[in-house]
Amino acid sequence: MNLKLCLLSLAICSSEAFGLSPSPISSKVGGSQKAPLLSSSPPALFASTSSSSSDLTSPLPPKPLSLSRGGSTPSTSLSSSLQVTSYFLLWYLFNIAYNIYNKQALNALAYPWTIATIQMAAGVPYFVGLWATGIRKAPKLSGADLKKLFPIALCHTGVHVGAVIALGAGAVSFAHIVKASEPVATCVLNGIILKEVLPLPVYATLLPIIGGVAIASMKELSFTVLALASAMLSNLSSAARGVLSKKTLSGKPVGENMTPQNLYAVLTAMSTCILVPLMLAIEGTSFVPAFKNLVASGAQTNKSLALLLGLGGLTYYAYNEVAFLALGAVNPVTHAVGNTIKRVVIIVASVIAFKTPMSTGSVVGSSVAIMGTLMYSLAMNASKKKK
Figure 1 (cartoon, helix red, strand yellow):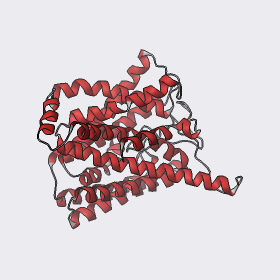
Figure 2: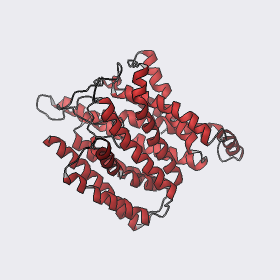
Figure 3: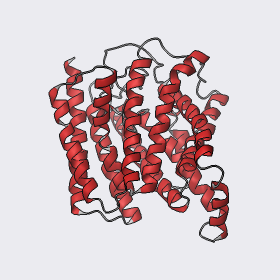
Figure 4: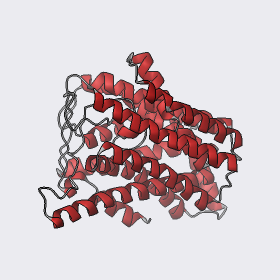
């Protein structure tokens, strides 16, 4: 995926380009469009309904597209099906591209905090450009609104930087295997902070997740404590982000024009501001001479290295942007299955791209953990329908 293709896809995937108009933040509970967005795992702002026990009703995604023939012509149904397919293909494509570009950048320059900052900041020109041109309405936030969003932005920062460190310290496949255990952290924090007790079948699905990750960790050929700890930091941050979002944003709406995409954009800007001083405190400016030394060695050119870092940032923001469209176009069960397949595709793609060996135990453990995540997603959706 080159830069022109990435930028073109980003422009196409703007919600307005598809004629979708997401609902602004709402505190409405119940209804047919109840879909958690600020919870755990990457899709749909931060999570799909598939891997989170946080049932945030704000902000709401676009109304799911109907793929049934009732009330629509065959041509309309075919058009909707093609549109949904394009969302999922782009979601998978950007996710795979991000993981590959990110790992390549980290292999070339072992500065995870600096690279994480560059990636987070890469999306800023995109949404600022949309706001400046009026293509997307700019959000209006008071100081009190920003203060309310700050803890969520802090967790958002932890999600990203934890994942980047994990991807740099170990194999991409291992990082995603550990990330599959995110529902465990979500359940624990929901119980501690929100005092929420989930149905027994939901807790039962955590057993294969825990067991699978444990098996994969013991048999992982590229296992490092840093990779495991960083991936778990990302999991805990994601779970905390979901819980805090549910607790903070379920009341009075925050600001104006705060669609899901704008909320994600605001948190991206806030996280960038958080990351810059942390990056300077931890890694300083040593990234610059390391960049120059790598170019001087002939391993990379200024253009190729800058392009690698830029594409990593653009694909990171792009896959989150497309995730809104994917979640809004299908029902929760379909999205749960799609998210599970996405994780498998990323693991397989990374193994092929980097020729990472996986032991039999690692394959078995990852399979069990990922299937456990799918069962958790389906159990959560079933429990919500009974409420």
